[in-house]
Picture 1 (cartoon, rainbow, N blue to C red):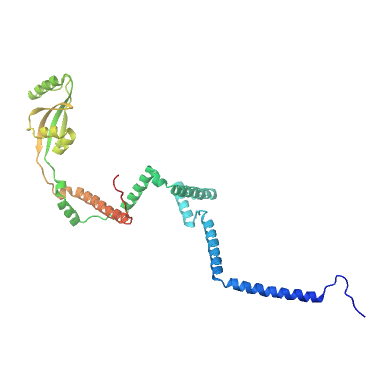
Picture 2: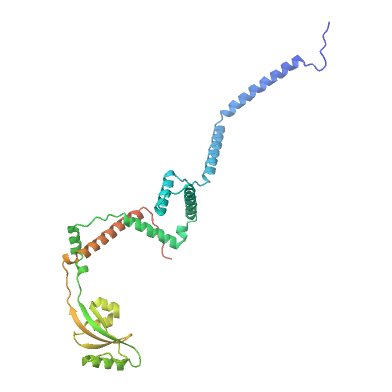
Amino acid sequence: MTRTAAPGAADPTAFEGASGRTAKDAKTLVALSRRIASEPFVHFTLLGALVFAGHLLVTRASDVPTLDVSASKQRELVKLFEQRQGRAPNDTEREQLIRRYVEDEALFREGLRLSLVHTDPMLRAQVIARVRGMLQAELSQKPPTDIELQTYHEAHLSDYAVPETISYREYLIRGGPDADGDARRLLSLLERQEPADGPGLPIPTDYSQRSEAQLASLYGPELAHELWILPSGSWRELRSSRGVHIVRVAERTAASEPSFETIREQVSADYRKDRTARAFQAELSRITSQWRVQIAERP
């Protein structure tokens, strides 16, 4: 009896053929994959893709700025609050302190991003002055020894020499139509040693121990020299753009050199100031030497 396959039933030979083709395709795919995986170019491409992906992740993470409010910073904020208020902050005040710190820090960093210290002259000057003050405060302030002071004094004797000076009285008559008449009347009264306090006459001014350099800063070099060479005890008339000067030199004091002991405090103050200035300049030179300076030619 012959068995007939039912309609739609699968042909066993068909399954065998399909199974053979599938196995063959799989072997081909595996071989191809092995050949591709062995190519150096593929290795390089995959490595580049991994590096790019990693860089992208890092870049995206770094795009978000971070404000770290550390435990030490919080303790500092609390301590400052206690110093101002005389008590510890409550929970609400503590949160406000942190929020204010975050706001200030964000504004500060925004200022740095905008380079305000470079574009705002006032802010730039404040920063420079602050750094100068910090550098000077860090300099050594140990008291000078006697040998240091005496050595400094001997090297700067001319700075402590007292120059020759004069003491004098002056009447100044301002320029005007009556200036010459008033000057003659005043000079006549003074020479006769009569009271010189009539109507229209000026009030005298007394100057004590003025050097020729001080006179020059007060009157100018020409009038100062005329006054400087006047003999003592006699009234004289001098003229300038300010008016008529009726003057009498009362006393002339010779130049002198004070002893070290009499000016010790002044020498000590000057030495400290000079030492600080030299130390600061040395520190400033150290800082500036770290920079390469390029100066453009004059336009």
